[in-house]
Length: 438
Ligand SMILES: NC(=O)C1=CN([C@@H]2O[C@H](COP(=O)(O)OP(=O)(O)OC[C@H]3O[C@@H](n4cnc5c(N)ncnc54)[C@H](OP(=O)(O)O)[C@@H]3O)[C@@H](O)[C@H]2O)C=CC1
Ligand SMILES: N[C@@H](CC=O)C(=O)O
Image (cartoon, rainbow, N blue to C red; front, side, top):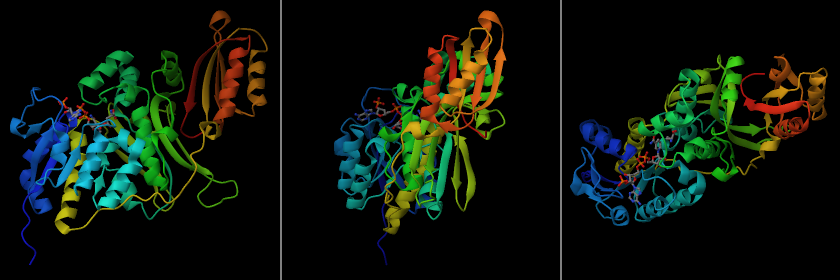
């Protein structure tokens, strides 16, 4: 008969927005978690930066500033990393796995920058490395990609994966809020990263896109491979332009296989990109409000799948961490391990210029005859076909709005560059990519 196993002891690294909720759930759901795992889960210690910070519901005797000593302690079985950033998080996780502990993390920035080092350590040390909370908060998304869809062929992953920017854009669209006010609210609600530049400049969404692309296409993708544009350049004219098109502006993460012209298996490569784009109000992503996230996955046999839920915040993120904690604890009790990451496909990540997109372009133009023909000529010169064109206003207020068909991004941006130089174009008031059906 197997000897009875004692409690599993958890070292928590970080006790901020997410960590404090992990502690609360471990305490409030202790009985259920024991029943689900088979043994109790106990907090062995909590590493923080400042011991003097007020922390409601946290036993001060558990706190330490010596994270390194905590992760290697003999009485620790599992490590949960919710400090964030690259260092010391990476060294601490590596130390923990070297010491035979399995690790659960929400750290997308680190996974997208240097996941391969962590996955290699997990393989070598025989440890589990789980990270459901790293993408889209509470939404079970990585496990479906990592396990449920591992027998299928995923073509595309598209969605809203950053709660802070969705909150800001939604506040701007529905309440006419200012950018800075909406960002401050998102920070107060615990959605934003420690440095919110990561959110508004698209770094956080790019890290998540890299993780999603790697899992979906079984190919190495890092944050540096992802084309990234944030929302700081989104202007009032862009939002108003979207409104006129019966569309909204959303920060999208798009990961897709680019098929080969000759139908070669694996295709030409993958395109992984993050940028603000207009989507029609009738599109399901348009109705994703506040800090919610939504992700579409398109797979060959499964067809289209949609995942939706809270994408940020302490409790939703802690829910995903607890799910991983139970899974890893069950593996420990059973003496088994979870799935190991394999990136066997070595697909190139294509440059943005080769990606096929659509543009919305709003031009302040000199109100004189021939303006439409001159603008149309520039699009034709770059082999970009126009889907719709509208001329508005007269004299100094004259505007031309052009929506293109799909074309290589390089051709579209070259056209806009040329338009800026035309003397009949006073200003390029708005340029935005358009997603959704043509
Ligand atoms: N907030 C969210 O909605 C989500 C966050 N995440 C990820 O979860 C992680 C944590 O985020 P969040 O809780 O918001 O961050 P916080 O900034 O709220 O918390 C960070 C915690 O880490 C501690 N810490 C910082 N540096 C050190 C160090 N050198 N040694 C020990 N402890 C340290 C801090 O200590 P102290 O308390 O003393 O300052 C704090 O308790 C990040 O990777 C983030 O990207 C993922 C999904 C959603
Ligand atoms: N800052 C992130 C937190 C969750 O990942 C976001 O806003 O989505």
